[in-house]
Amino acid sequence: MAPLNKSKWTAFVLIPFVVSACSFGKVASDITSGIFKDGSPIFEQDGDIETSETAGLAMIKTLEVFYYANPGNRNYLFLLAKAYGTYAFGFLENRMIQYKNDPAKYQIYADRAKLFYSRGKQYGMQLMKREDGGFKKAVETGLLPLQKKIKHYGKHDVASMFWLAFNWGSLINLSKDDITAVADLPLVEAMMARVLEVNPAFYFAGPQLFYGVYYASRPAMLGGSPDKAKEHFAEAERLTGGKALMVYALQAQFLATQLLDKALFEELLGKVDAGSVDADPAQRLANALAKERAKLLRAHEAAYF
Image 1: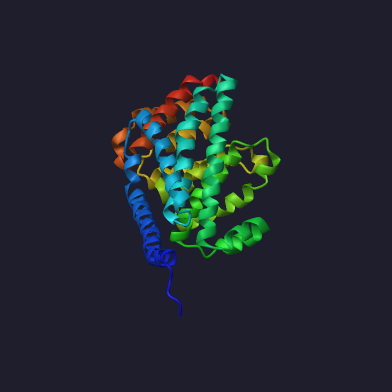
Image 2 (image 1 turned 90 degrees about the vertical axis):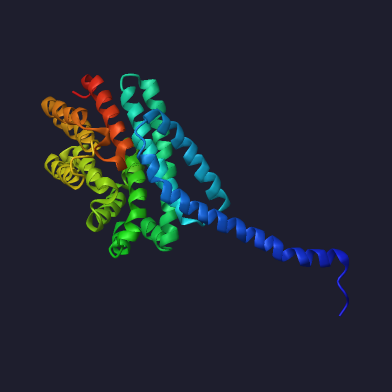
């Protein structure tokens, strides 16, 4: 056997160190992802809206940097799907209400919200594909294959599916003039129905709020039902012990306005005003955003009635 020349010997010796460095980088990234996930609730406990809005964007971009370097990591996909969705819902949709009477500015924030929900949907779909290799194919095949696929999903599975459905459903809700987008609604509804069945209290009664808005925001001919909306909002209130002020804000925004019931509108916004941001420290930011939303809704009441 011929001896290795110097250059080949050097390369041979360095291989374990290179592999080790790559492995170490992934391990470090995986550990960091766990820290991000475990520490993410601290963001929801900050009641300062301006600080949280700025920090939210920085957090999203930081997560994307880590995801780019480690695209197979589940935590980054999960956190990005959640972060894009909650940022659009809490901050961008509030700005849409703020500029309800300014079409140009309203459209700027509506487009941004749709962009954020679209990105959240993309990360959510990648996450579900990672969790179940056959999920995306079931979605692309149609409603029945999807229902068959998800009927055995448990609590571990529906947490990821919730954020996909939340982003996708919110995107559709802002794209009602797009027939192609609206055509996907049955798929979203099927996913959220399974989440509701398995874990109705997930993320501060998120599935209940989804269906409250779902039934309240559309006319009867398109599947709307004020009675069903009231049931879901009432259940969300029960599950959160009345401490989630967003329950009342959303009910005012979608149900009271659909019914053209100004008295109900004022009653619900009054509950938001009377509630405490600190009623539940775990959702202090959501409560602060609910109070801001209530203030904006009241300021633009004429646009809804």
